[in-house]
Length: 253
Image 1 (cartoon, rainbow, N blue to C red):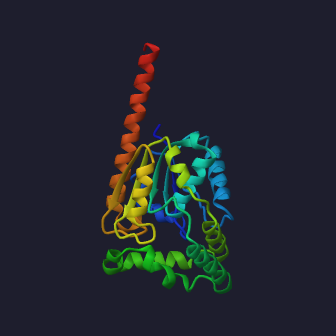
Image 2: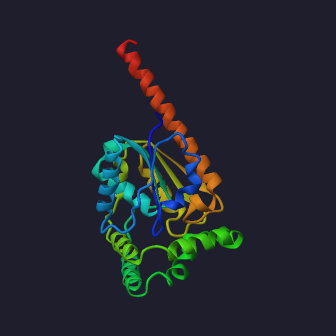
Image 3: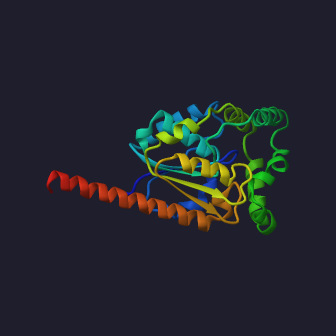
């Protein structure tokens, strides 16, 4: 059976953002946990592990975009043995700056008071790249609506969890599974420089820049994103097959 895949969505969206990847993953068991609204990334990680246990999964490939990538680091810190590989997309290992923390906490307070109507205007400029804003009004509208439909109380909790997340840079050198680092070339929130920082410190990593995409690269250029993901999963399958053959050889089969 193909290795399970866990898809970890971005903030403040839902697992629906992965729709363009689901056909690619046919043949793989797929888990789409809803990770919005936890008081900490550690609690969100524990939730994901419980869902894996409920399915009897010992290992998986974890694919995380933005907040989903931050969660991958917490999962690695908790139970690294559950990883067959990881995809870190449009994310970073560094914590928020003091200014970033202040901004998230102010947004959390405003969301609790006003709800979500102000949120698209405040964030869409950074969540989507220049090409998407110029050429894909239907996607801009979809992302705006997805934000407006998010539950304000859960959004506020996640904002606080993101603001107080720990520095994951010290974990990078300990990552002992294959890692694919993806980033939109127009991503201004977690730019290519942050992706290069991660790729340089993860021992078995490969990095690709997704053209004509911003922070939500899987939505903005799904063809390029899926091609990269497919290649990585094929590489993992080949490595797994080679490991089985080598194990059989050592046992004398």
